[in-house]
Length: 228
Ligand code: HEM
Image (cartoon, rainbow, N blue to C red):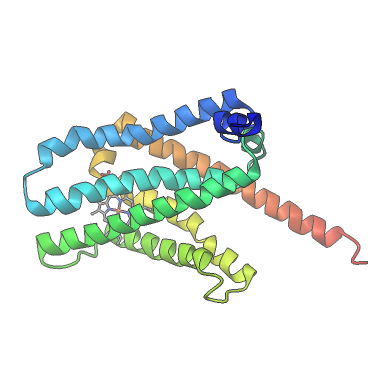
């Protein structure tokens, strides 16, 4: 194996292997925390009813993992200079696309299984406020992701699909509000789910402000440039 290939494998394309290792450890811990909470609750609930065992329980696990991955999406997609000191931009964007697919599938499965659970348990779909917020979030997610994945076959202009993709920014706070009001693990896991998710929301808000500031600066510098 050539030295170049070996070093690429070791650092996974990282410019700073120590910082990369720290980021990987933090990312894995944040992903494992809600899973441990779910694992603590699941054995007690499993077997209560087939609907709970095979729809509600897996749907909750998918939502918890999908939500954390969705948070990573923002970090990877926002072109943070700090992160680009550790991983090249191309690597971040590649991971953004890859994790995005996994998060999307998990959250979509969550939504479909929760709707099926409600129908199987109550004989109808429920439209109380926090479920409706979840439905709106799911709809925004589908539009935002489908636009980005299928912009070529759909013949969407770049500006159109990028604008639709921004719907992802709406999904995250809606998903947080929805989960915070309904989620079993969010309620039982103060330190494993509730606080980490709240931290995600705070970081998300800071990143959003940063993104808006960049957009405003780019827009105003474009306006002050001589038109030639
Ligand atoms: C049709 C759309 C949706 C429906 C019907 C729905 C339904 C539900 C229900 C009923 C719960 C509570 C489960 C329980 O603890 O028993 C829940 C929890 C949750 N949902 Fe959704 N949801 C939908 C969409 C979404 C979306 C789009 C997201 C993410 C952006 C999301 C993220 C979560 C999370 C993270 C939890 C907490 C799981 C837990 O603490 O165990 N949901 N959802």
